[in-house]
Image (tube, rainbow, N blue to C red):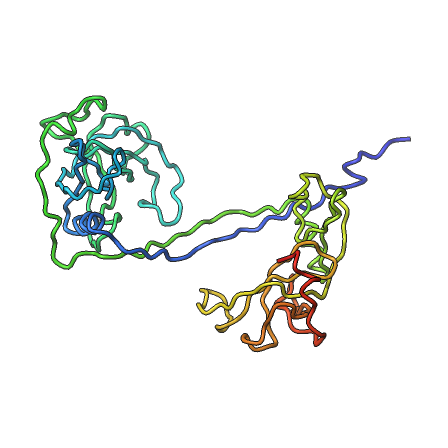
Length: 338
């Protein structure tokens, strides 16, 4: 007789993976120092700020990192400098300064005491070294952003040679001239796109949860100590720190515990505003999950409202929850789940 390997008798479950993107525009106003710095880049001028101790910081900040005093003493530094350290980037990602392989470098511009992080356009890692001289390559079109510096490029200047000792004070040998920070049409605010691309792997507990949803069932896991049922499951009880494995089917109905009214339309989400997002304690669960409330005017949603899931024809999770028509739940039945 021959034994069947365990891996053949019980094949490993499919490992779920999904690419996810978190993206949003980040809008911020600028104080006088940052406004001058970014407007200066638009005008091909690099500004730093002098601290109370006489150090020149580039990029400039509004408060002295050593004394916390407000600083406004702007100075103009050079557009060439010395690489203090670097790392090669063989596979540029979306939104990075260059589409071809490049080096991330910290560059101490002439006249500065600190280094600026940016990209260096180089033919390969063998062409980059600490102490090499580089200069700014300006973008063809500039709008008052750090991207007005397209990148740095290698630069051999006769006065310093192709490389400088990064341990010397050559960057501050010449006193940088003061600058008023005044420009026509100053930049007062920026919108910076934030984006995070990653691959999500849910793990054993959440994979079971996701697979059950595909069958229009909602499951959680019960803690063997406190007996709470956590939905969605995490594989361990967050209170007791004990692994969970007992599967418990909950719902499908539940109770609205808390909610918010959404008035800002999300990109790529075909839902008209205003709408309601709520925490819903499914019957039998010891933790509320969140979901959208539909089938009722947004201003009639309330704590204690009894709801049930609504599935689309091919949906792998509830599209939204709607009122069941039952009387509202008593507050005491869900107050521990707020």
